Image (tube, rainbow, N blue to C red; front, top):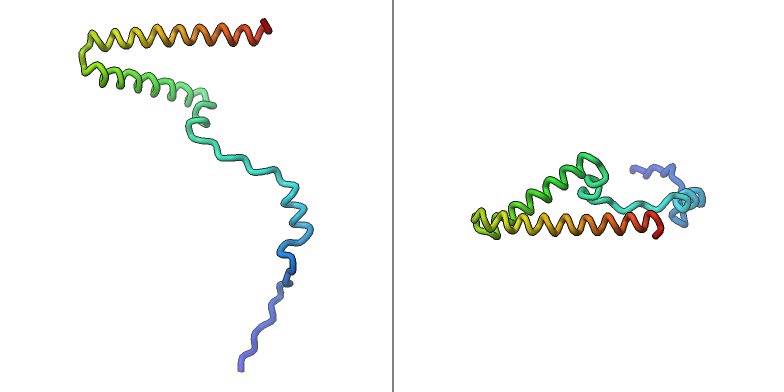
Length: 102
């Protein structure tokens, strides 16, 4: 008759020893995963790529909206350009005032 071999492991009653519990509590909490777009935006080359993708997306949507009528396309694109310039200028003014403390 075969006999079972004795295990060399020690049975733990609590599941974790005090040393491993101390190590686990001293670890920093895990950081949440960062999305691909955020990681690309933090990189200068990725930022350029995202800006180009946004510009191409806007131009593509303009073509779809204007149904390939070039006069209408350039009017819509001009209006978008003016709005983007105004928003950029306003953001620049507000950031400059916050930076200078006025």
